[in-house]
Amino acid sequence: MPEKLKVVVLFGGQSGEHEVSLMSCTSVVKNMDPDKYDIYFIGITKSGKWLLFEGDVEDIQNGVWEASSKPIVFPADPSFKGFFLVDNPSQVYKVDVVFPIMHGPHAEDGTIQGLLELANIPYVGCDVVASSVAMDKAMAKAVFDSFGLPQGKYLVVLRREFEQRPQHIIDAIESALGYPCFVKPSNMGSSVGITKAHNRQELIEGLKEAGRYDRKLVVEAFIDCREIECAVLGNNDPQASVLGEIIPCNEFYDYNAKYFDDGKSRLIIPADLPEEKANEIRQLAIKAYKALDCSGMARVDFFVEKDTLEVYINEVNTIPGFTKISMYPKLWEATGVPYSKLIDRLIELALDRFKEKHPE
Image (cartoon, rainbow, N blue to C red; front, side):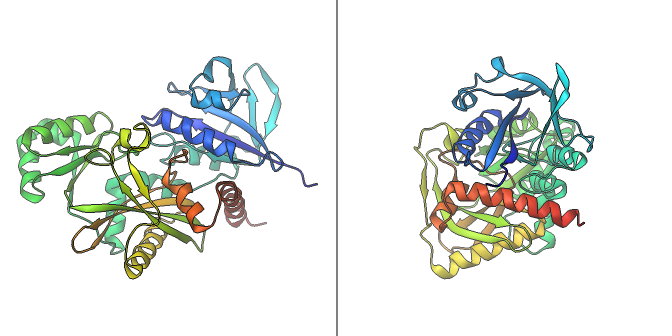
């Protein structure tokens, strides 16, 4: 019997999406084959402490894992190839691959990926550059523009510019985009900090809200659209899933609608679109994936105009949600890849990518 892979499932983090990560982690672990993997649960607290948790996986989602966890060090020094307990540094826990199931800043933005590159340990998902560019909506939009991917109208605003010249910024947004419009932090996911502004006062409040999360803000013109998502899987030859459509329970698919409104939002899989249009979107998803040089996985989100079916790319999520209601695993399930097989494939892709980057 082959030796089991030693896999770190890395969860938590310092971002506003900490709780989502706990839910994603629980779902991932429940779908990992214990006959194939020795699993270490390593959680990062909101204050940035790294802890080894050896209890019941349900206590991760419940948020009570911290109290019984042990502080660890996960060194960037590649001679370790693992981690050790703070109170027992002589025993190193060797690691074959890391599955970061964390969302948002200090997780999905290339920071964790950079640490794992220094440690010379394979990891699931996109590398440093793809992670950081995809996380920064303003930078990703610039890349999409350069690759000719269709996008809605948008403006990038610095928080300091708004603080120093609020009237100038508001006038520019109203002139270029009008109302309603969406205001977003450039570096945040899961719709955290996003608001829809119907008038000047709501725009001002929206810019302040987004500014709580980032120094750079993106304002987008409203599109009367359907929200369509595509899951992409692979390294050099990525594959696109069937498409899914989100019918949000709120005015738009915000943080609560995604994770905490108990299934009131509807996910329609496959999305009801003409075959030719669905194929166009799947091709655009792969084009966006390659434009950012993604690897392993990503979920590519689109807006499709209700009347014309014109397609606009919204964003690429390099560590999509893996909760029990998340679109990414559901899309692959509908495409013929069950959740457990998806986890296996992602780990295989991580090891393949590592070998490609480190040829013998």
